[in-house]
Length: 209
Image 1 (cartoon, one colour):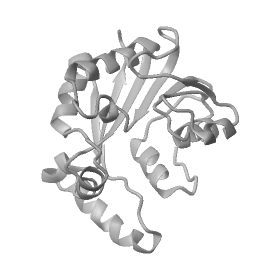
Image 2 (image 1 turned 45 degrees about the vertical axis):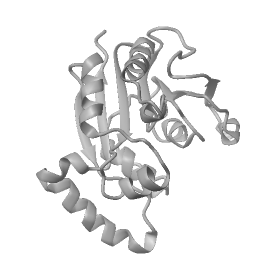
Image 3 (image 1 turned 60 degrees about the horizontal axis):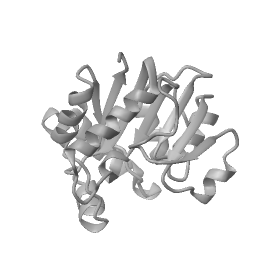
């Protein structure tokens, strides 16, 4: 299912994720921020959407059909086995961002596993530290401590040894230069040696408990 919300960046992410969500199922958006992803789950995929964040963004209150709770990924305030889907986008690297404790990251993954029902799916999307666009902009300028691709895979395989991984480019692009950046994406995504530098690392996990 192709989506076209008018937000080029979000459309790129969900279209390249290319995951078939079943209408009417329950999803938890962990670390939802202003709710941009949650709105897509509600409006485009017709999911019963729940969201969690440590802050209550003002825009969250305006999203019709969203159930929001304030809380942390380390202690998710929902029952065990409650959700069909658990989704998190650019959240894991913010947990203990200064120290980057492996044990704390593992604890976060265990919480995602706990609230996802048996047979459900966990989707983790994380930016790649050494992507040629992200590194100067997000890591050096904005001080985001993004994970290395190798670290993320090691972390996820610790809890989810049967996780499937995929990789793609997705960025906010100035509309005037969109055509040029599409050429850049084509080469990044189609040259095997560049796979470890692609913008997003994605884990798709069937939760077999």
